[in-house]
Image (tube, rainbow, N blue to C red):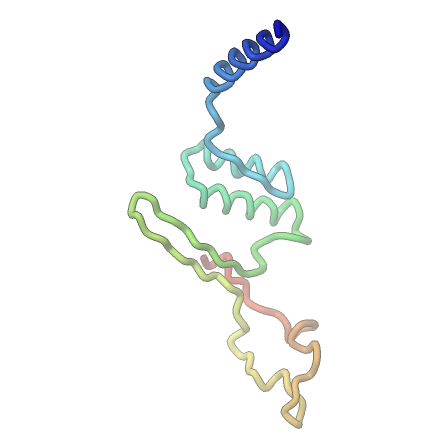
Length: 131
């Protein structure tokens, strides 16, 4: 019985001391430590969550360009707390200006498999830099 009382006293003491710890105000996770640090730096310099996300994405484009970067597209749904509204940003990549649907078809009007996925006719204009 004495051990149980000692255990309960210790648990009570520990729980009150831990509750006084201030939790972190932000958390950032990324595929590379330098990108994570860039996001944290953006926040420490007064930026918001979106600023941090852009910093992380830009850094990933440098430290692992084979997997990340500005060469693609994205969709973002942002909440602007001060204005109490949502903002949607569509920065999806688009086809080049001279691209046409029929350029992926054979002379019988059938889709040529893989032509829109591989090779020069599969290229798109990145949308992220414009956003």
